[in-house]
Image 1 (cartoon, rainbow, N blue to C red):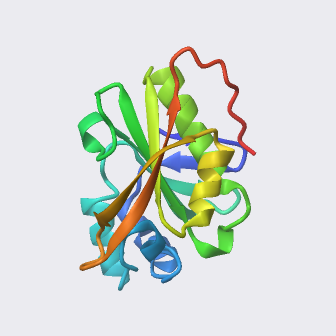
Image 2 (image 1 turned 60 degrees about the vertical axis):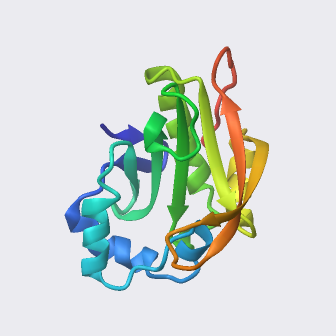
Length: 183
């Protein structure tokens, strides 16, 4: 299933997206602030598409203008998430390539996921986290209406030997009449 916004198509990742994924995920400014190592080759990116990004609810953030995937956003429901407490809750995760930072594309993608979670999946709560120092991610969460809930220190991530402080925010979707903006 695809989700569309004014400027984006959120669609499942395809193995042929590996060169675009590598172009953006190999930048050392992207992965480490999200807790994963930079991609090392197009083949590495292809393997990540096949093993990680193929998970249900994980989408390539594709620019309508160019039809190129430039980032990723996902909705991990229930036990698929490390933050949720029930099957009626989900975690949202996201990242985007450096050339697209500051253009409002991630809040636009997250808003589409929030609408989908509320209107189609009828979930009760969404969770979202960011690691200490990732101010861009914190700002996305604030802009999209998430509210700080708690922090966890010493969290392991996909980078061997690295432990980080994670700040967790949440959004209640029950009885929420909020209109979610794409901008």
